[in-house]
Each structure stands twice: as C-alpha cells, then as structure tokens.
Image (cartoon, rainbow, N blue to C red):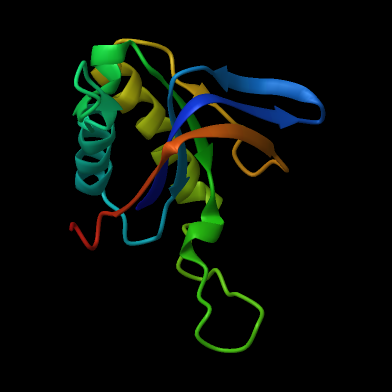
Amino acid sequence: MRAVIQRVTQASCKVDDQITGEIENGFLVLLGIEDADTQEDLEWLAQKIAGMRVFGDENDLMNKSLADINGNILLISQFTLFAATKKGNRPGFTRAARPDKAIPMYEEMIKQLSTLLNKKIQCGIFGADMKVSLLNDGPVTIVMDTKNKE
C-alpha cells in the first residue's frame, strides 16, 4: 500500500457536484492498493496514519497526533499511486489491485481508521471521477509505502 498523507486545514471530495466527504483540520489521505498487499500491510499503515505526530504543540513543534487535536481524515482511493513510468510517457497501472481486491481493502482501511480514532472517516467514492480540494497546512506531505518502511 502507498499513502500520500497531507496535513490540511480543510479538504473535500465531490462526485457529480455532490460532496461525498469533507473535513477541517486533519489529514487528506490518498491511498493506493496493490495486488501484493496484505492485512498486515493495512494494519501497519492504519496504525501509522492514526498515530502520526505532525501537528503543532504549544512550542510549535510537530508533536501532536490526530487524536490530540481531534482531527479528521478524508480518505481517497487512488490507484494511480502505483503508476509505472519507466518506459514511455503513458503510465501503466498493472501493480494496482483490481477492484475485487482493492474495494474490500479500502473499506477495511476505513473501518480500521474509524476504530483507531473513534470517529467517522470521510471518504470519496471508490472508482469514481472525484474532484478533491484541499488547503495543505505547512505544507506537510508524507509519503508512506508498506513495502518500503522508512
């Protein structure tokens, strides 16, 4: 799994001009799922996202987590995070999981994050043409890959 985690002061997702998810302070998380992903990958990434301390404390240091600031998550599925760009100019997406695997894992990520944070996770719609808006705070953007745990 790959995740692009952006600290935001606001973010929203629209599908067909209807808002499907909207948050204020928290994370916009773009989530890519590949065929090789496992439940272990999902649980590791959910724990990392929920516990990530990148919000300012009283000394303006990044020491607070989502729970500390009562922050929210807008989770967006994004298979293009597994774009293969080595050959030519048209990316390939063969590493991205097909919907029959990706949808249940995406739904499980929603459940895991909701449980860890004890709140509803805002979402896009899997496979839809989404319009995502955000105001990146910092900017703080972190990329995580469960196959390359740096």
